[in-house]
Amino acid sequence: MIDQFATKATYGQVFAVAQFRAVFAGRLLGVMSDTLRSVALAVLVFDQTGSPLLTAMTMTIGFLPQAAGGLFLAAMADRFSPRTLITTGYALQCAVGLLLAFGHLPVAPSLLLVAAVACLTPVTTGATARVLAAVLTGDTYVLGRSLSYIVAVSAQMVGMAAGGTLVVWLGVERTMLVTAGAHLLASVISRLFLSHTDVVRASGSAVAGGSTVEGRSAVEGGSIVRKTLQGNAALVAAPGVLKLIMVQCLPAAYLAAAGSLLIPYSAQRGFNPTETGILLAATSVGMLIGDVVIGRAFTPATRERLVLPLLLVMGTPSITLVLDLPYPAVTAAYVVTGMGSAYLLGLQRRFLEALPSHLQGQGFALLNTTTMSIQGVGPLVFGVFAEFLPVGLAIALTGVSSVTTTLLLRDVARPRK
Image (cartoon, rainbow, N blue to C red; front, side):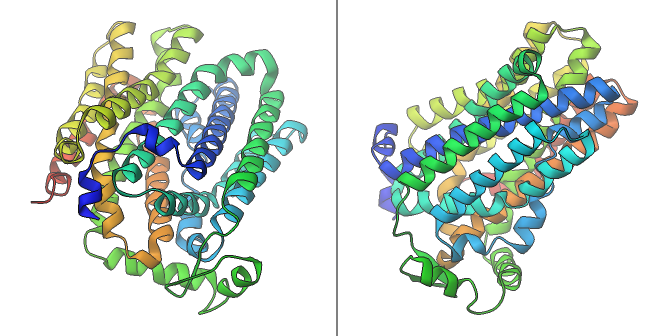
């Protein structure tokens, strides 16, 4: 396994795997739809309330509720067919889009609906991670995880840049209908092209997939809730897992907080809608550049050595927003911040190897749950700061917090000797 990870792979080798292409397409459609929905709701809430705090909450309403799914349902990721879980997840998102499009719901019920379906996101994330770990090996797995991340940020980039324009052209309800159609297509792709014979795990062992086995594995050894709690406890106790989760999710929380304040920051600075749209996409552009360059140009060992420097690159630029920088400099700061997120490439192998094999899906679900939960808390905390401080200063505080956290976790960020 070590030799496999030491051999550098190519993105072409990853795309040669048919099931990866299905996961890639579904994720592209799903994340873009989620982002469009968030932007539409955020614009609506800011227009109605003018509150930076409520706008930040709206941009991240799908994050914090994932804690409930990760804490009580994540064992499903290892006990049901990944294809079933992924297909069902996209179908439920489609249903939410249709309700938002045709239900004419007030803001509060709309946000609650988005929050409710977000509870199942850790389950589908864990199922997706199981597919990648099953069909990709060695450095192709690392690059596959990178591509999965790249497609997510690319879809976010498109969603952020186009979201405001679509809302103006179509209105909130019709924008929601667009998201429903994209989620439906993602569900169909997953159903048609993911494997019919997925492995289903029960009580720590692997068994053949199928409807009969799925139903039995879901009840053997206790309820899903109890198995989830037991599995989470085992993961936290596993050597290195908790620290690796923290170094992956805490910097992401500060990044999310900085992004969630961009709409009120742009309003405070007097940026026009086009400039605001570009700013909203700037971090995602940086993420795309960073992942492609680091993933393509450097060996696996070098990527692991770059984790700490890239974490510092990720946190430092936001600090400069304490000054009233010209628009191009603000955009550049967000692009460079996004590039630093490529540090995650250097942690993929270590995290996969740290997970107990029978809890692999739940381990990735726990990572996603922690990341999304903290990303939900981060914008709330810094949104409160922005209620009382200049928004630029609140954004600068996200950078200070990121750099401080990086220094505290520097031993975890450094590669193993």
